[in-house]
Length: 264
Image 1: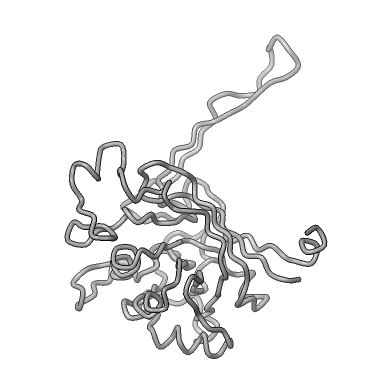
Image 2: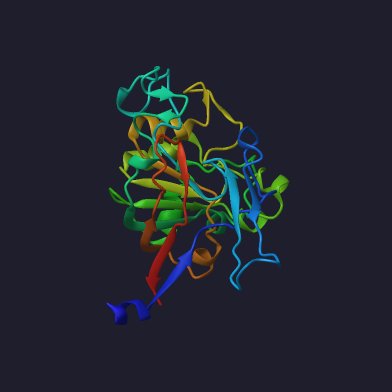
């Protein structure tokens, strides 16, 4: 086992968390950390301690959406009705973040930005089913049932520029449906919303159509705000993907620190 580890590279796919990082407006301010206890002189012993308070939404930074995050006609995945029993003031009684099992799966990177020669991809250029298919073909990768598919839009370098980061592209409804038809376990992207932010889909008559298609209709998790730059630079299109959500009972999502593991 140790020999195997020595011949692999671990790719950290999480962005740093701090106040002022990009955040979807509905979830602002997103993340706040303050020190509560401090190291200071005058203590009765040589040892001192410090600790802080962390205030965050489940959907700030690199995170995964739980299946209770979105509903269609007030029904969650599996036809579960949203009512006073399932949705309470202290969270959801079903399909909360604590129900997301640890993810250990084959990962596939679709580097759409590099394939199209457009990066970062702007909000005016949605990523379509055709883009995903052509990128997979050009990279020589196939997508199978249970895979985790990560879509690169070239947006991660803008993480320290929230205004520009929020103007990124997203995956169109037909792109999300194409992935759902392949029965993937989860999807992820280097943008804020997976979908094109604010765009309205005329067929489903909703914004964020991918959230409806993936989370509600197919039970496929969405991971947002990934950093896919190192994977793309090394052209790692096929790898082992690991993601461990926190067991936040009743929460609509969870911060995560996903990694990709590939042979060095």
